[in-house]
Length: 600
Image 1 (cartoon, one colour):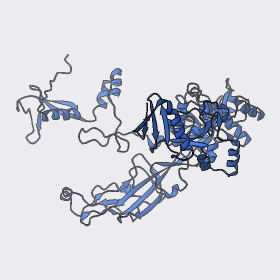
Image 2 (cartoon, helix red, strand yellow; image 1 turned 90 degrees about the vertical axis):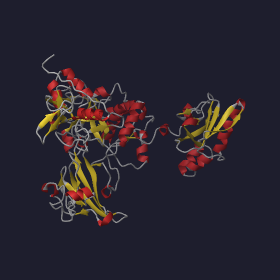
Image 3 (tube, helix red, strand yellow; image 1 turned 30 degrees about the horizontal axis):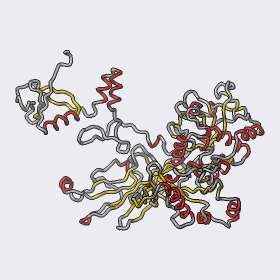
Image 4 (cartoon, helix red, strand yellow; image 1 turned 120 degrees about the horizontal axis):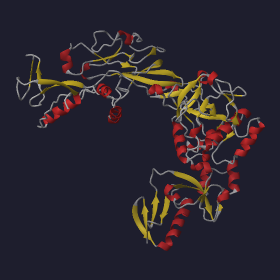
């Protein structure tokens, strides 16, 4: 007997010989509309069970139904659809198209194209591109790429800078960028023109060759003159918000100029951009820790009131983040539903491509900018054309992104002919056709050209593959990541530096880094690195317990041996001292055994 489950619950069973006809009849009744179109029917022969599902959260995709080796979508249907006499819903009602999920797909044999239909096939793809998602179907010549690279390439398309919204000037979005000169790709999938996309990339001239080792390990070398002309330029936008809150007892925050008697007053320089209302003026150029909105808050606790006079207020201004800078783009003043005044300030910062900025193609060939080379040092063709990007040839063979190479060819032809090249995945476009077109344009059919050395002017021995490629500038910019510090905040418990760039934290030298320094024998460097929480402990030379320094009577004594014992000052980490004190709190009394460091 075959068990039948509906949405995971057992509902009945059927004899094995009748099971297939039962499943077929269910599917037929779904196609004519007796059952929901979203219902999934799966016959699992291994488990001897039929699973019927109507639950939400399943990804469904449309396929053309094939019966007895013939597609139900005939030429008459296609003509009617083209004329507008037949709609998508009509095809669904007629049972020509049906939606199936991943589970039911296990019972299906799907033909990629009408020529591939055989008697065993159950479905036909509407178009081979339909099996890809929206983002992946945008990749030019995706069928020539490895699947793992396609997944990475699709991910980078989501991270590309472009025009994220047409009304960005009215919006206050966190951590967004706008590309200055976005372009549509020259070689592109038909999906690109079917959906209204804002472009998110630029067409660049790419030559595949190494350059002095600056494009090793996926790095790219970029033409400095191209960058100066606007290539890869973007604006980074960040909002800052300040709310004038009202507290119990008639107390409230105050947004306005800051007087010097306020507790926590910053330097006068920090407030230099504020106007009479305590808000920064538009187009002011601010740096890290400069005040954007001046705000004071009432003392929150009685202890605070005791320390300072009741009239005194605390400084609570909104400041530009450390290590960031920006020009005030716009200021918005409004109130929330509770009547609290809200000040929202948007800053902008123009970003030019710099060393460490991340770039990518839709084929998953991502890398950081390794060098900005002056135009006069870049290799050039016989026509005097200098590439925008030099891409390392070592990134191609192991990754098998042949689509990258074909896009370079297609982009080159599109540029020279001034037309858009259809680069939809699974199209019948042959490489031979592209080679013929290149030949007719006066280029070598293999896409290679003789390049001349930018410094010596001598022709390079090897012919270099040159073409046009759609490159994406990604949101990961070195200006948002760069971080360093000397001294700064420490945590209260361990007295070690805080972590995190946003808090102005330090860079942790962990166990593995420490072991690397030990292997080098760099003992003094190790000592210096590990004294961020250095503390001097008094240790009794007789019993090894931690001593006490009595500053009032100016004496040092051991809690066990008394005043007569000799106390030795030793340098330890504060974290170690904390451990000893925690052990003492657990009634475990640690004794430190001291030795002369010169005796072995």
